[in-house]
Image (cartoon, rainbow, N blue to C red; front, side):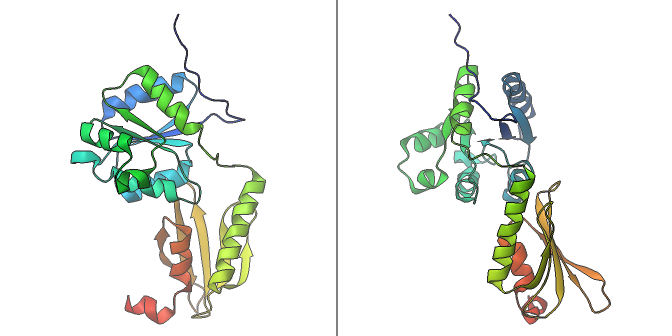
Length: 240
């Protein structure tokens, strides 16, 4: 009898999986396997932190299959898994690697970096179809699903307002549609605008000058960094 591995029940939309791996052949094979099971799959062939953080911000996946950065011993993958576990909405992560020592270390869960990574599952290469589906099923089963409704957008905007208020911003004006705010900074009394750019997975911050021209302050992966860029005293920004 052939055992069928079905993905867990997903209310509404299918579970989203982000595959981070720079091996194109592996990416194509895993994507085929998971889409056949009903998962929605995004892929990323870059393993640096900024690329991963932006992709997670864009897709808000229910789990990540994470390969290391190509170096020995899973490389920077340890730090990326720890980052993903610490996000305000943590993303369950599957270690997906051919490095045997890293697999043993993660399974033993005895090292500080293994505990910080908090892997939902560990999948060694070469892998079997059954092991892949079991690992992904275990991971998405731990997911706190990202809410994509209008009410959820309003809730995220309220969180943005709360954080801006705590930071000292005044005259805060927002939109109900997505994270967007126009506000006054307490330090230089200038008008700032902050916007979550979903397509790129970054926050954009701009500052209006005395002639109402918008100067770009920068783009940021984390909301806290975006707020800090507008709230820090103007003299600190100039001297930085």
